[in-house]
Image 1 (cartoon, rainbow, N blue to C red):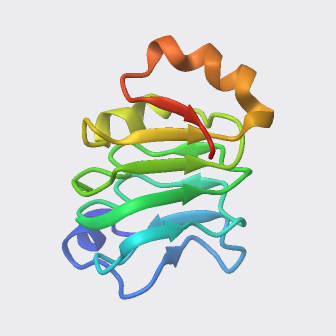
Image 2 (image 1 turned 30 degrees about the vertical axis):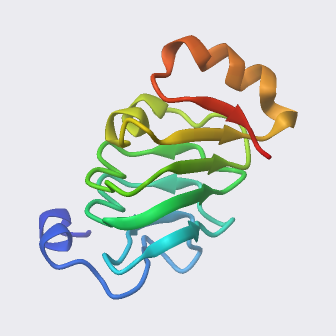
Length: 130
């Protein structure tokens, strides 16, 4: 088991996964800057995984992402864009609560119907991928 409070206090120097399969992303280093693309193997981002990555400006989420934990992007005050490669993951309201006000969400056109169904619930701008 992982000691989440300890990892928040002392984040790792590289991405930390639950296992070698790299399906569950537990914690990212605070040194991430600019645009970061989460590996396609990831299906779940755990609570507080990117917390305090203050220089992260754009995150690209993998195609098969299923869940985003509460607080996963808390304190990522420089984020201006989150790009999804697949359909909306469960718990998207957790993501919404973490993002700066001016952050935009981008979705792939092949999943437009699923994303547009959520549009009224979302507080951040929702746009098709350029």
